[in-house]
Each structure stands twice: as structure tokens, then as C-alpha cells.
Amino acid sequence: MKDSSVRIVSLIPSGTEILAALGLSNAIVGRSHECDYPPEIQDRPICTAARINTNASSRKIHDEVNDLLQSALSIYEVNTEVLEQLRPTHIVTQDQCDVCAVSLEDVETAVASLIDSSPQIISLQPNVLQDIWNDIEHIGNIFQVDSVKLIENLEARVKICQQKIQGLSLTEVPTVACIEWIDPLMTAANWIPELVNLAGGQTLFSSPGQPSAVLPWETLIASNPDIIIFMPCGWDLERTRQEAQLLTQSSDWQKLHAAQTGRVYITDGNAYFNRPGPRLVDSLEILAEMLHPEIFDYGYKGTAWEALTTDEVMALSRS
Image (tube, rainbow, N blue to C red; front, top):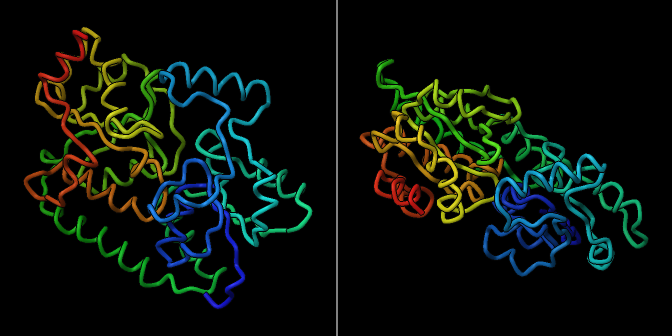
């Protein structure tokens, strides 16, 4: 980066991770309350807060979000006092999902109130993998840093996955249901169907680039997927394990092929699948390990994902 006077506030975790991957960590002077990676940026001032109780149950969070949206209120708030003190030259935000992070409109309103600075707003709107490569290139161009090597490295890792599954027959490609929310039940979408397909699976219920949608319980039961993967938005591995019991308590759960064969998995969706940045390629590799353990072993098991065993499912159902 040529200009040492650059001061960046990143209000979206994936944006923070892109900046860091491009070598711009030192230029980040502020972050959102959700930006926690890489670890070295955690000492930067926090510029946002949620208006909902993120520790509540999935149903209560959903209801609180709906109440705010129906009242035309934002789910998150920007602390303009902190922004004013930080005097950013650039703010990285998103225009992809008003539920996932601070909205572009919120940021524009906050910036309009600043007295001592007029930062440039960089808004990201990724829906598929190519959009993420484009975002990386776009940010690299703005800050005059080379993004080519980073993108080439990420694309090379994707190609390795593709090459290793080329010999699979149709019968070896499992049907996969990715769950992004528990109550109401919602299917993961946007870039997730693309990742599933690249990892050697056949994604169910959603198409690449499309938003998440409510998934009727009856539809999940009727489709009887080979594999079920929990990746709730914003939750780590342990929180996902706790919330999984909402589904496993159902009497129909044990009828599912995935439950009977031990192919139900929980993931750290917050760190990986929910963040459209460089670690989506890690997410692809995690999927590859779950879908085809006979082919892939990247070493993510135990930290990024775990199998929800039949004994655990039964214990959760009794709890």
C-alpha cells in the first residue's frame, strides 16, 4: 500500500478478512462487533452493536429480527461517536444481507453525520464465489495492493477439490441439505450450493446465488437427504450443537437416512460458511472432508466440524 495515511474501518467480518489477507491489517483502525478474525484485529475499537439478544434461542432471534424489520428499524446500530474519533478514510461494509450485518443505508446515514471526515464507502455484495474474487480484486485496486497471488492461491485450492472428485460416479454423489437456521428451519443458499457441488455433493432446496428460504419440515423429511449439515448463521460449533436438539427431538428425525447412517454434521458456521471472504475456500475443504472422507483429510475435523453421532442425537432427544 502506497499511502500510509489510509485509515480503514471494516464493518463486516468478511471484509476484515479480505483486508487482512491482502496485508492491510495495520491500516484497519476500527471494526464491527462481529469482526474477530484474524486475532490481531481484535484490539481495534468496535463501531457497531446489535439491537437483538444474540444469545437467545433461534426462534426468539428470528422473532426479534422480524419485529425490527416490520417497524422499519435497523437490526444493528453504528456508533458515530467512535467513527468520528477514528477519522476513517475508508469504510468497508456490505449490501448483501440486512440481517447479517450493518446495512449500507445505516453506514451512509452514519457517514453523513460525521464532521471531521468524509470516508469513502466500499460496499460488497457477494452471492457466488466469483463475486468474492471480484471483491478481493476491487479492494486490492482501491488500496493499490496486489491481489493476484491471493486469488490465484484460492482458485488453485478450489481446482484441487474439483480434480479429486472427477472420478466419482453419480451414485457416489450424496444429496446434501445445508441448514442455515433452526427455528424456523431455513436452507443455506447464496454461495453454499456452489460449494456443495464443488465438494462432490448434490445440493438440495437452493440454487447458487439465491437467498436463503424457509424449508418446511415436511420437505426435509420427504427429500430424505444422504447428508445433513448444520451451519447456522453467526454460531460456533458448540452453540450449533446445543441448538441442533430442536430438530433431533422430533419423532421423525430418526427416520431420516442421514440420521440412521451417522451422516449428520455440525459446523462452525460463524467462522467459515457464513463469511464470504478467503475462508470460504476453507469451507469448501471442510465440506469435502464431510462428504468424501475417503478422499479428503485437511485436518479441520474437531475444530471446524464434527459428526453428530447417533448416541449424541438420542441423548439430545432425551434432554
